[in-house]
Image (cartoon, rainbow, N blue to C red; front, top):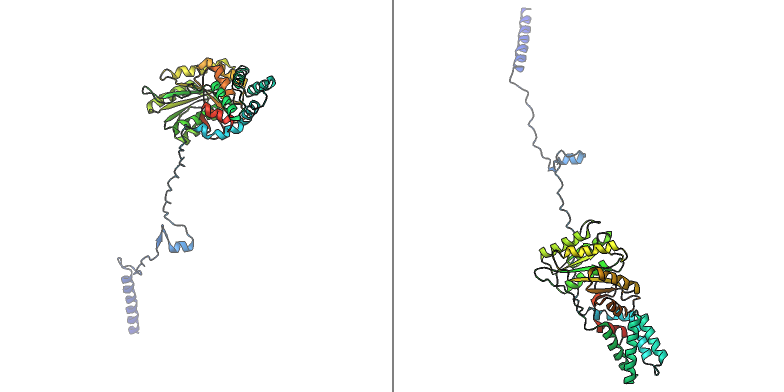
Length: 385
């Protein structure tokens, strides 16, 4: 009995000592070694993450794309001005040929009586040559034909050409002053009523000068027509010409002044100032046009004042021309739309009325359809071969 009690006491003591040893501070249950991560990281997410569809914890910022460069506008190289009217002769001939054929047909008749000469004079009048000029041309031709007694077609054509060229004025100075002088650029003001093609003429003239090797600056002083400055800037971009413009409604004289100033600073050869199209009946607007010229002349001489006339307007165009000539001292005329319904005689009439030469003619809608006026080439185109 005592033996059994001793065994029980020993067992209990052993359990107590074992528990004490197990719970002693500083001893921890051993943990299995941590596994090295083997998943491949991709942009902050593991392959397992991607497989399970979980969002990555670290995202790499997408590469910043460089902005697309602005589209480059190819600068055009216009053809030189020399010989342009000759190159456009066929187009001019198509619109004026009826006039030439009628005259040549009348002059080639076997009998030229009073009725025939009256018909010749009427033909000249319908060609917008004006009654006084038509009568003078008819009298000159009548005298020469009677004296020479000729009816040969070639001789009649030569006589008619000589008379028409004489009326147009082959000795008039039709050159444009477009070169710099005294350290300053040439300044050209372009004036005229709305609808004559004034702004387009500025752009085409810039092309003519660039084609001749000049550097050009365009001044958008037509601030009353919303599209005028945009239109002018488009022309300038195409040929590489500078453009000075301001907001719509700005003072036109201020724009013209700044354009000339920039032209002086950048040493361009020529400054072309586009002015607002003005009705010749509005005295206030005409006075403002005179102001633009005076303001420009505070820093540079105005070398050319080019009046743009629609060749189809006839007598109304002449009335406009006279008023403009009184305000700004026009130095030359640009006849536009001469390839349409216009009659070639308008050239003679304009020069007679204004006392200034036609220097440029517009023969179509193309960018290179503005040509320096050449009397002989013009008459040849009218009369045909």
